[in-house]
Image (cartoon, rainbow, N blue to C red; front, side, top):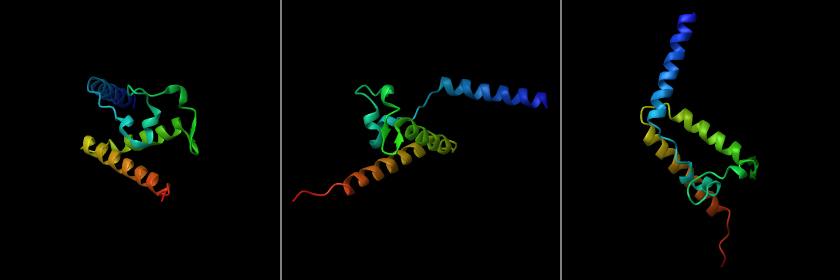
Length: 105
């Protein structure tokens, strides 16, 4: 049993090493609902993560999105799935924005 744990530990460390050598972070700043979480350089505004954005804090909302992204990233075509998630998220939020505003005649 100890040998299996050591093998699993070694495998996880190797995966982490390969991942750190080939970073491919999700570009959350490209998502419509999160754009105001970032400054003009694309860096997250950490001082505002504890502020509420609707019912939840920005930190909670980002955590939920990143958890969904992590689950979806388990597939064979990560780049395509990320693009699909980005497009669906942006589309839904833009439609919500349009539906919540009345046209001025």
